[in-house]
Image (cartoon, rainbow, N blue to C red; front, side, top):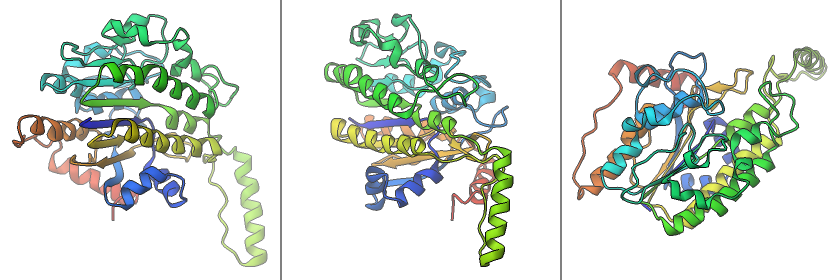
Length: 359
């Protein structure tokens, strides 16, 4: 396999680094420590929203266009309120297929209804959350035979609304182990058989588990902050310490949140052992603020092998095409225009520096 693209929705670079330091992410740590992998923050281009949203952000990754350019400015993958076929001609999937690469797309966000040119053996399993219209989940339609009878129960929208967590206003989110179990079944019962009979040069694989478990983190209520300040102040006065209580309405990290990141690490290891990709691109559409504001404008990108690391979501498409299309044409170089102006790049660098992502 020439390239594995692992899309982990909401994977935050600060949390990732923290868990690497704690020894929780063995696969990612091994790749970065040995110099095989490069991991850092990746800016999510700001559009019309106060925070980046999954639907527009992933479409920016697929097309290399800002929200204003591709036109999708609101809505997420849960609602399924955008039509992927309206944007397909501008996507990295279409350009790779046109360049003669066999492409597999599995469970990537905002890809409903499934659509890809299939003459060369390419295929797509939609990342749309949940639908009874099985023929629109896959392309070509013949792939429907790989879907288990209860496939709808494995899709994200079902898991968002099947848990016992009352903290999410939009529904009850299933716990982390339910998401992991569903993801494993999709890989073992759907993805692996398809790959065995329909091998591809490039595989895109998506999961929402890191974003969803971020939403399950419980904000500290306001009264907790007041109590915390009183206790910390008392201890500081008594012992001369400088304890800092949790910030107002900050997000409490929990074991499920950590488990989601550990699962991404194990997922990456599974793909390395199963597919042996020459290149790896691990990325997210945004990060997590953990300060009561949900999504953050800096996500994660990590690369291994001969591929440039994207520093912004609108660079992802060009980084992939630079690595693969130039190689496919016999080693010739492919010139890809920088989609950012100098002023925009300086602004992004300044924002990344202010957030502590660059030296």
